[in-house]
Image (tube, rainbow, N blue to C red; front, side):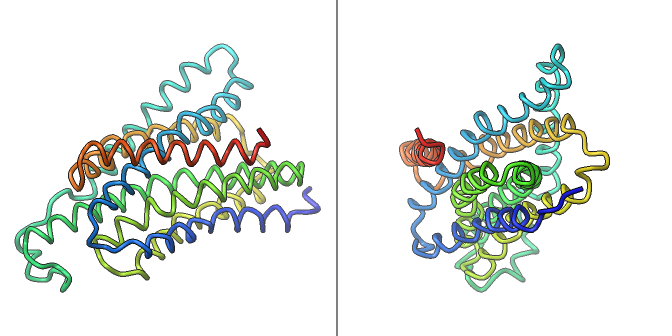
Length: 271
């Protein structure tokens, strides 16, 4: 039975809600500056790609290898494919077009029909990113709580690392929503709801830790998240980044995202 669960749970809450900090950062960028949006979308893709193929993939591999030392490679492979399929299904359920009949009720911020279409595409990118990050944050919160409940010092370092890389994830969600709607409150709410799945994961971990929580399942869920995030990065974020800037802005954003998240992890790990 867990006797000291309050501090691990609090650390997970703080780590999860750091996405809101990223949401606030977007307000320092004028919403009409499409070049900054191009850089921001590329930055988001860089963060998601790097985190997926380093932290999340490694964690999933270690968990699956413990239980399936021979077949874990195939589990990783099929888990990744499952994530791609899930992302594709999500993609199908979020329309990628706006019907002409929708223009009659369009937002007052739209200048014309073409502007409405542009804002819809940007908002859609934000929705897809929010879903991917929310799914990613759930097992992340679960893992943070489990580590913290066993070793508080180690859990604190994990929570700080997660909080730091949740900031650019908050930017990834809030930036397109703010550009599409012009509403700061809505952008903050989206970043908030992506972060809340992290403490939800911790609460579930608290309830199931000594019941029937197989770590192998967490590993499979994590590798599926990799598939979701990679699909969204290449299918949505990078094409939009190119559309609202050019490939130089897109690649600059990608490399900036990789460098920032990589440096933050190195500093936090004491290298």
